Image 1 (tube, rainbow, N blue to C red):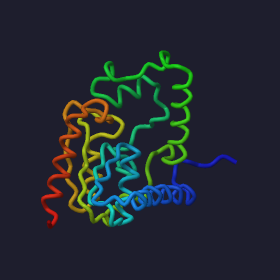
Image 2: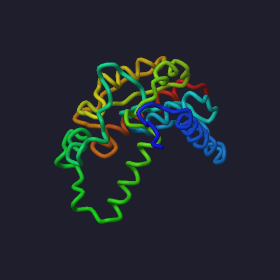
Image 3: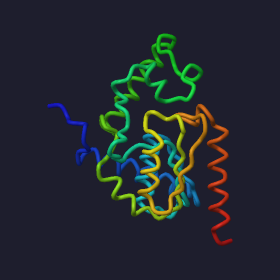
Length: 207
């Protein structure tokens, strides 16, 4: 029997929580403190779920073009229906420069891409959201920065503003001439924003 991945099943939600708990357990194992967790896209969703677990190891969260919530009128694009060229056009301000031509990739890379897409479907579902997440985000207590590419067409800037609005005290910031993957397209802008956020948080903490 096929699973319906258009909505989160209890099994999928338990898998999410286990994934996040495992990541936080790694911080314990490594004895890391005052960790700023940064996540992009699905990784941003993971970071948001980690923020809800209230680890003493974390000091703040940066959600970069994150998915995971439902925003009426601003749904995440149906990623799984897109061709590779369409993925590039939705993901980058400059798709000609940063897009990948799958016809030029070796078989191993194509196999890895297929595996990544399959895993993405299992964890995120076809709609890439958990209908309960938006209302749960009011429980986030750590400083949070929501960064968004102004040219993101996987999830647009209004989606990002809605995400920031669901998190108490979260700050929203646009990155210029940037799509869904700023770590690839404009890493300098991304790192500057993260450094400023971390520095501001460190300044606010007692010595």
